[in-house]
Length: 113
Length: 115
Image (cartoon, rainbow over all chains, first blue to last red; front, side):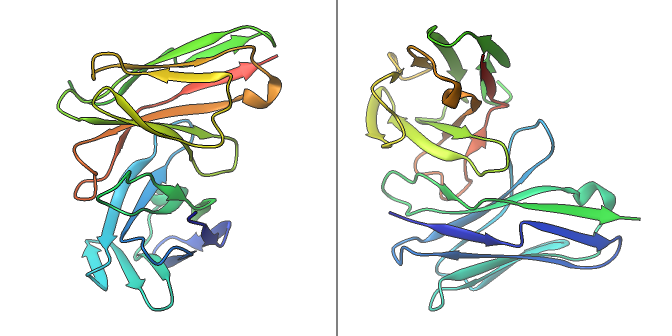
């Protein structure tokens, strides 16, 4: 089955700096890669996603890049703000079938003042 | 209908007891998923339904676990003879179709503590 690895497990940046979180996946059939943000005690919320036919997608301060050949994808957050502090999960799935998501182990991002 | 609802939010039970959780998905969503999340880990897939049909179950879902979605709307997850290792957050999610266009919507989860 699919295996998703995520790095780093914790990341501390100063407000205004950029943060990058990286994930690799094992199943070459995976074609959908969402990122979720989970604040303490709250539900995971989708912040951005990308399909395998696209190499990069951007939404304001958040961008995701995908390298299908290397089977890795990354989340980039620019101009970080304290409210960006949370746990971020990457995930992978094969759409069109069960579409079950396989999640990474999460990255705890701390944005300091 | 503003999202996925789960009930109860918290459940403390003694080892060996049975527990049942409920999930109400977004009404027009035909797919419903159950995930389990332990501290410091990402959610792990348990099972999913398309309408009322349970189409896939993870190996994580032992014989003590059963899920139903009798009318293709709400779903229940029952754990029989609970064990301490069952302590986790149980998350429900729903999607329209395969969710690839808009992703899942997760509920707030039911936190189970087995003592």
